[in-house]
Amino acid sequence: MLDAVDFESRGLPAAAVITEPFVGACKAMARLRGFEDYPLVVAPHPVTSLDLAGAEALAYALTDAIEARLTHPTAGLDL
Image 1 (cartoon, helix red, strand yellow):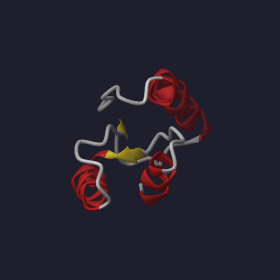
Image 2: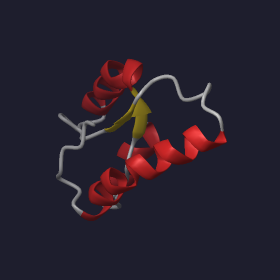
Image 3: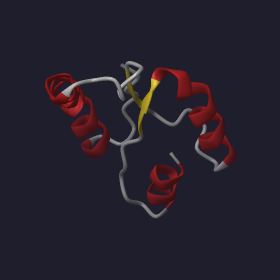
Image 4: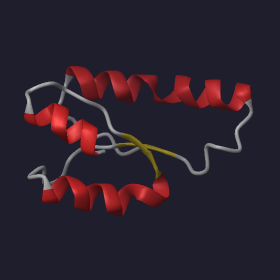
């Protein structure tokens, strides 16, 4: 999250990909860095228990949201 807002503060689009339990903490971090309502790409939790096929499926499912976040930086992408 902090890397994403640091990139954004330099004018470089970034996509913060997080899991559901961390939404509140990430939004608070973004606010503290001057990015009120920073759009997040939110994945279901947990991801560490996914097997390879599950991880690939999740990555594929998030690809459009990540691409949109990088190419349209003002788009809100909570999934």
